Length: 260
Image 1 (cartoon, helix red, strand yellow):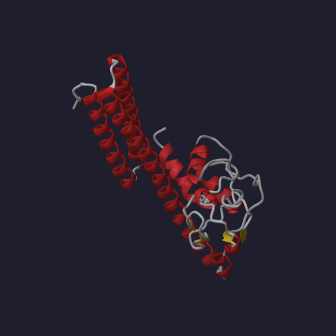
Image 2 (cartoon, one colour):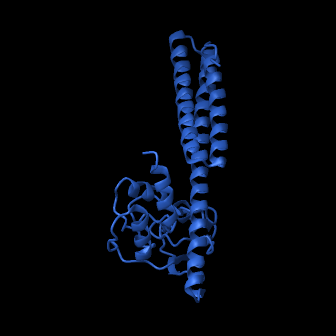
Image 3 (cartoon, rainbow, N blue to C red):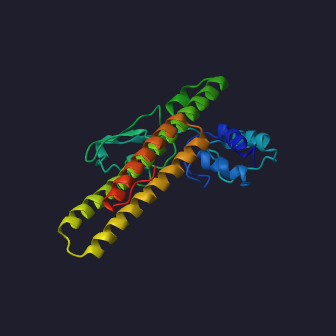
């Protein structure tokens, strides 16, 4: 088991980082983890046969034919005159490569688009086309094509990880805000309530909610430390500190001295 993280990293380094989910996993890193656990190496259409061969070398397995046809690099293209500004494609994009706002025209950042196709299905007006990526088309030599694929993979990995951190942070912030509201409501209720048992139960619920938030924050910190990403570790530590303060507030409302 000690060599598993290194194997996962080596597998992930060979995947195209389109984050398309065609392998059956929500991104290239989860697929790398599944391969390390024994899943087949031939489920990446954007990587094609070349990726299968490299994965075979990394894992020591025999190459196998792709389960689905190989796919050349693509780019999503929004027919802007038809866009209704629903934001569904923005929400679906795994690398935050679409700009726009509600009821405003959306556009794709072509240089950042991995051609994952995940924006196409949610579009309610079918105004997104998939075209050959212009940078791929412009590559005249094999070396230029390799350089393009390497650059796309690096950008795709970085933007995918950054998006996941953003979504995790937003989800934590929403949970903390809900818990703060619960504490405030409990505090207000305690001033006007005549039933002492009801007050106590409400305060206990606030403490339990805060304890759950702290446990989740600590779990996310442990995960970030295992991944070794400095930015994610710093963010997770901030969330642990926020959750700790929230728990102290809840315990104070319950007249329990916070443990240090």
